[in-house]
Length: 196
Image (cartoon, rainbow, N blue to C red; front, side, top):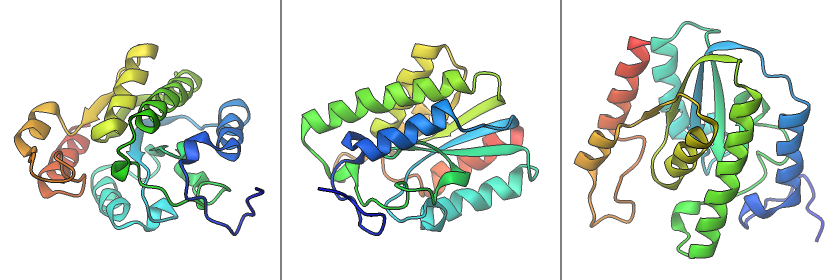
């Protein structure tokens, strides 16, 4: 089945060839301009990512703590790895998928393997592009980022901290670690950005 640019992909995008082609473009051809700080944020259900309520919260914190032009936002997750300025590029604004609702172990394991590999390649590509790197993520997205950092020996501040996550866990909820939009997580994110 051919997907047209106006259609919306509803299956796991990390399996689809157009997402792999877009990722290869970013790795092989796209020029990432050096910045003092890279901020890695998970993808969002609402597209473009910058229009999602959570990303708008994150952006307010970033703008209130970091000088304009000092940082580069990178979106990662089921979409692959996307410099935020490419969020409207096909296919990144043309899919609807929420990994958090998927319980199939094979799909989750495949995601972790594929995303860890993609993040590793991006971290290698941008090894000298950023002075510091911060990732704001939980769950399997965090697992992929931690795996990529370990694989590539990349220094990364990963937030929320494990201590804070452990304090916030509620095993009675569908998403025990909660949401990155929770006040406690956002405050830690803000405080760390202010210190940088």
